[in-house]
Length: 98
Image (cartoon, rainbow, N blue to C red):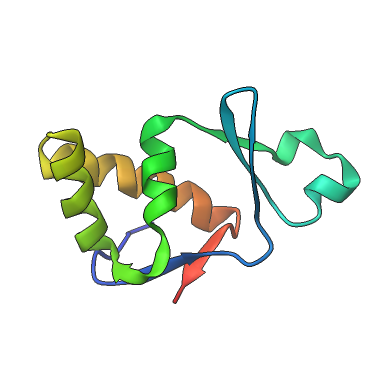
């Protein structure tokens, strides 16, 4: 799946965010109610930084630029991390286009 840097993505309205015991999790709609722990997704610090920027306002390329600056790393490295996470989130319907 190709991730287009010109697209603006947003978090799904059905996703619940929780921070428990220092771990940040996103919970797909329905998983919290059913207790389906297999659907819980724990995000590391890089993935959380990406997730936090998915505000439905900025194109993905701008988010990559911001993260590269914040993490003081090459945009190409961040682009790979962003692309990998976005692909996984799209497959699980946890994000969509704005």
